[in-house]
Amino acid sequence: MDLILKYFPKLTDRQREQFAALDGLYRDWNAQINVISRQDIDALYEKHVLHSLGVAKVVQFKPGTEILDVGTGGGFPGIPLAILFPMADFHLVDSIGKKIKVVQEIASALELTNVKADQVRVEQLNTTYDFVVSRAVTRLKPFLGWVRYKIHKSGNNDRPNGVLYLKGGDLAEELAEVPDRYRVYDLSDYFEEPFFETKKVIYVPKV
Image 1: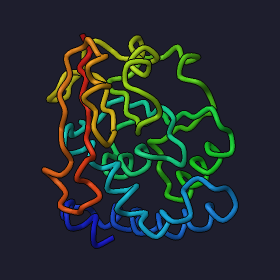
Image 2 (image 1 turned 90 degrees about the vertical axis):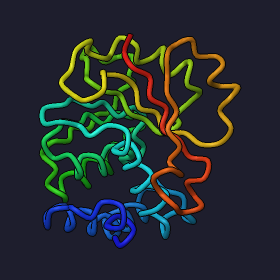
Image 3 (image 1 turned 45 degrees about the vertical axis):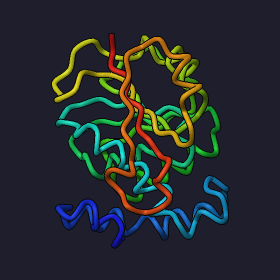
Image 4 (image 1 turned 60 degrees about the vertical axis):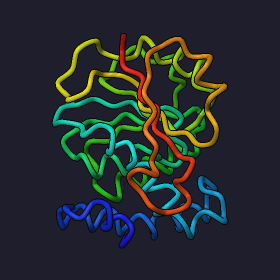
């Protein structure tokens, strides 16, 4: 929790309670259904929660914003972002049912009324959103193909609607495949921990 408060000191008491509860909830559920690697569970706040909140350094979602989290796994980045932006609406999807069960139970335990979680492939969705977020589910080019028609054209945020993709490593080759306009944000500019040295948010606006 200290790590979250270091970078997000203006949390409400309710948000602090919800973030603090994540450790126990994920430990309990991870013992039943493995959604986080065993070696990462002790680094939950750094490698999963704070990493997810890197999206908030690029866009501050305004009330009423609709966000789709594709391939959410155990609920990242959707759950931490839903805590941080309680007035925005989040739809978390994954093709693996047991992972969605964990997400649903954790969202319920945290009383996150702004979260909906479904076992579904993104290609099957007929709805559109302001933003699509995800953590490295595949290479960026095919991912953009999956979600291109899932994004509204107009929105009320400070940035145009689009994709916010969390990924790490050397992305030069991967980004060379992408014809879209994009911008890369280095999370090391916002978070000083060594884990974030190669971590990035790739922002692709709707065109």
